[in-house]
Amino acid sequence: MPPDELSDSRKRTPLREVTETVMVKNWVTAVTTQQQVKVINFLLWAYGGLLTATMLVFFLQGFRLWGFSLDVGLLRWLGGATVGEIAGLMALTLRAIFRSR
Image 1 (spheres, helix red, strand yellow):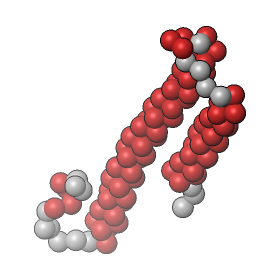
Image 2 (cartoon, one colour):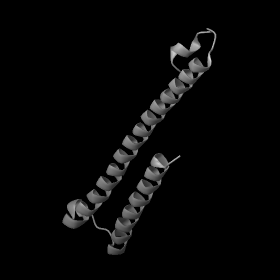
Image 3 (tube, helix red, strand yellow):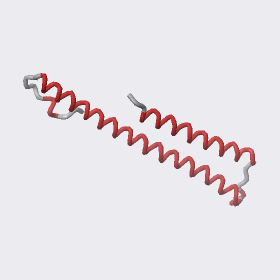
Image 4 (cartoon, one colour):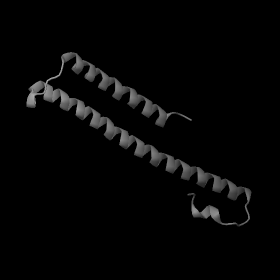
């Protein structure tokens, strides 16, 4: 919702219209920035969780805890897919959020 100062119905002068335009642009920029911060925080936590889960699988495989055993080819595929996924999604995310307008 735009700032309340814009809702009054006083006579608009050219200077007032410019001031209102600047206020609205500032408000839109602030809201957009807040949304970008929320998206980045969510994705960074999600990427961290994915990396942690993958490292847990490697840890379980390395120490053979509770009879955990996976094929070596599957582990290589899992590691490569994780690195590729994280790098690709991070690149897409950062490019979309910080692209120049």
